[in-house]
Image (cartoon, rainbow over all chains, first blue to last red; front, side, top):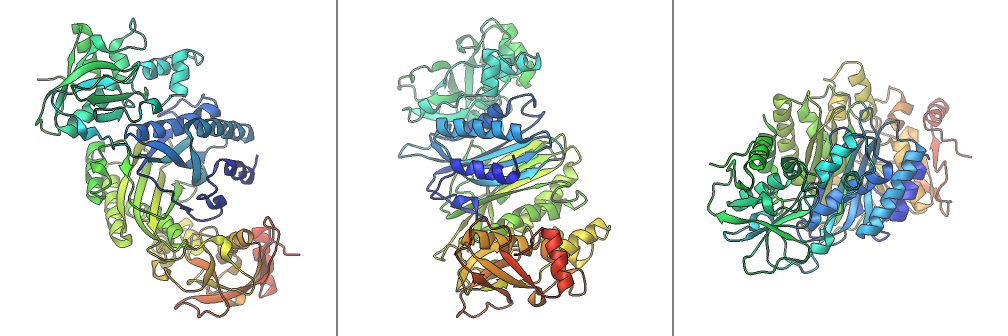
Length: 300
Length: 300
């Protein structure tokens, strides 16, 4: 598959009203409320052994997840692909197949992008726009004293999936999640959400982002976390990242959205925004200490 | 300079109303009409010996140029930087200095981005949005039979600058242009423009893009081209790229914008859009043949 055919085949995924057939120097921009961009680098964010279908899914999914964490629905994407020689015509066909499936699944259309050679690793960037459709914008800074801390579902699948991949087991359910994360589109419009982030850096780190942006401290109760594997290392699962669940605070009088779990509470406000340790861990002492060691967090 | 300080220092370049202090998973999107994105890869698009100030300028400039070629003024940018170890704190400080100067010069504010490690080359991506402010959108497909073909200024500085750089002479005027191209913001709003593109792939190639998108053939008269160095290889200068001039067609009854030169004419319409040779070269036979050899174009 030549460069020409590659762009030609991507055209079927384009927005006919805005991508201008990929013929122009720019696209016209559809109405949108939010924009985000994330880059995945081979050997930094993925191993390089993943099938191209999965990589196409993941570079869109991590951006869709960012858009969802703002309460917006992703609608359009631009793609920057820097491809080493190993990305031959079979690889490109697989990548397009993955894009087709992901675009259909997420309701995305392509606006444009840039395809270049890479003399080194495969580097994939997507930039995604999204629409609020009348919903309230969620921000990390929205947490308030007394809010519950919630997660959208199981925590730790990213970390355990990466572990499986590194052990050469790419066919486990966890490895499948690491390769093809599912952004929580079903949580869009949930009522009573305060601060929100997606869990990409690890539950503790992303809750800490919410706390710092909001100037609060929160307790995280490890005993309440719905672990992907409750019998496995808890510290690894709350620090490992790549979950693409949502972590959010919820006003105290609001019902917990279906499928979500309460894992803590916002316990202090007016905290200096650059606080090093805004997340207070609760739970079995060994697990707390292991997690503190991994994050470097020691509260008080 | 740590990662934290790097993001912190970029904050001063952000749009305070939309970047959300770089604290959230996405930014809110300001009103915009067009969007484009371009990636520069070390050893593919630049040598790697350029100062970081120049690289910061160039990754914004090539995108601003794309936006200008649609008749829009660039207002906001997202940056994806994949940095190898060699990009140490001094490099990062220089890069921020270059961004500051370029953002001020182009009237750009940052919306967000993503900074990652790279185990290989330096990879720089910018995504830029722009506003028409009531001007007509220019597209490559706007050329019509009888239009003049114009260029915004001297052609060949990109090619000769790259030649100088490869010869270790980074301080010539041409090398300065290769490193710090100047998008033609002054041509925004020019009257009577038909099809337009910026000269990034080379004058012949970019005029061919306009011709294919418009379904026309055009004559390019090499004797009329304002070469950067009329005494140097013409073929190299019309095929080399990286000029970031505009090439555009102009309705026959319209005056040529100040500083622009007429270099040809649209001579045929209704041409099959995938025509291989939509640009007919005129001029000294040796120069025409040399350019045809370089592009692979042989008309009829």
